Image (cartoon, rainbow, N blue to C red; front, top):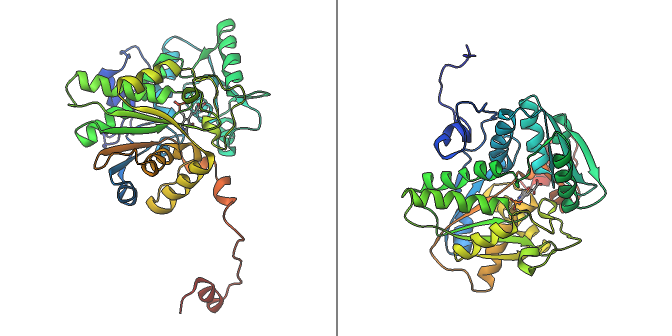
Length: 359
Ligand code: AN7
């Protein structure tokens, strides 16, 4: 239906319409979009000086549901709609469920989400509920949730929209396109957190596609960082009971494990781990110095660069893009925990000025 209100004013159209020719869609695909993507690539002056490199932040928290997951979800839900699905299911550490709930609702489908009980941030839980998902809190971790979600989709009429769904990776690769479109070249290094390893897989695919099409002249090294208590790829073994305050990446058996290793090896990159302490310190730094509020998991990439610099393993004068994957508003507890006592005053000019330190 042609929309009376659409006067063609320029607005980013969402990743499917912006990158249609790179995606497995056709005229028969109903585009279910919340105008995801087109996220800011912000030059980080303080971090550039600190790290001795030209640092850019790809701020994925500005996506419609507040994380990079929306890029893949617009694809997964559009393809599910094309195939006539009435219900979709996913396992999630929080962001995938928030995104699946929003996009499924927009498509008129029933979203079902499985999350580890008590281990996802409140903002994400609220999003799934707000968008009308059937929310199952599973007495287990993310890996248990994913096993259950796969079994449900194998045995019942419900489509799986986790990143094992190849359309998710297709949608997420558009973030790499945006970086190259903006810088007119691929960066020397691309850094990000690694959980289920879908995103590092997707970026590597996107960079390769642009390179093969000669839109970029180089490929970046892919650097991924896991949380130390949930670092199966680094330790080369499944972690049965992953633990980290970075709940989004609290994953012990990543679905895209092999693809992440391929990206690492083929790009001459690395996958390493950072402690919760290093994650929280980077999380505070990027908010305090760059004005960008991310969730703790999203700071794992920056934490990794800071660690490499301390180990004298960081090159100099390179162009480095760090993907900060999710919005800080989803998980505010880690700021409030360290905030100290609130300052409460009466409505009184002199008292206010004194407390602020104005003379
Ligand atoms: C903010 O929502 O796995 O390595 O179920 O929410 O592609 O898994 C979230 C992952 C990084 C890791 N940063 O990305 C889920 C989920 C944030 C995230 C990751 C996630 P992948």
